[in-house]
Length: 179
Image (tube, rainbow, N blue to C red; front, side, top):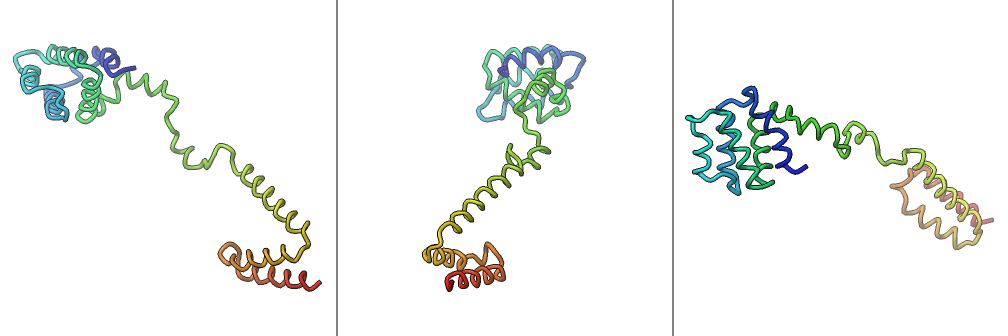
């Protein structure tokens, strides 16, 4: 829904039962007057802040005026409403509809725990396949070239594996190269 349609839907809710008081409406009008780009001109702001007219009438005219000006103006009205009357903003009928129909919202609790959609079993499977392939490739070639390559790789791997494990692997490679 566009903001104009949402505002049309919320108009009765905003204007009924004195949900907004004079001070909040004045703050909203002043914010719309001062925001960049200016949504309400100075004369329009004074017209909507006129204390001689009833609050219901002024608010109805303000909403209709914003709807005529376009979606951007209605969006700024919602932003001003959120800043100045957050509880009322959260109770709007259009917000309740958006909350129930918005399936793109991210569940932050689930997002914290979930690395990807495949899970840890997929990671372990891929790691096992890669390790098995590397072991098969290493064992199938009994050339001294492979041992030299393995020695070079193990020589640069104190970060990946511990030094004790590296030393044991290097001794094992030396034994293999002697045989």
